[in-house]
Image 1 (cartoon, helix red, strand yellow):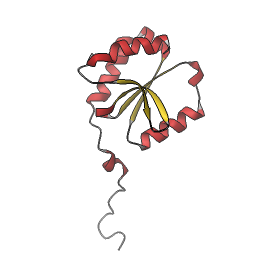
Image 2 (cartoon, rainbow, N blue to C red; image 1 turned 135 degrees about the horizontal axis):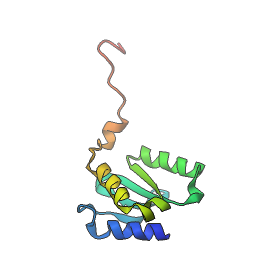
Image 3 (cartoon, rainbow, N blue to C red; image 1 turned 90 degrees about the horizontal axis):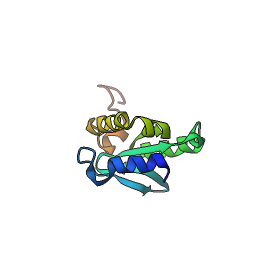
Length: 116
């Protein structure tokens, strides 16, 4: 783990963030995410400069989003210099209702008389 990931893990481990359980370096299908709160389908990624404009990150993010996860990305610098702000952002996302996967994937209902 990078220094920023170590700092983030110290903040998230043992249910220290409002009692939410996080796992680190968790495999999800063919990807390994930095941190995940499975009960709220929230992934937290801590990125260094090598991730700037990364096409593979975009593909992975789209796949994980399609699987029903929300993804928060923070730069290493943010975690190292603004821990409170990062934790506040994560907590805000955890407290925001997230519809079940089935509802997110369902096509919109046709309006009355449409599709007949």
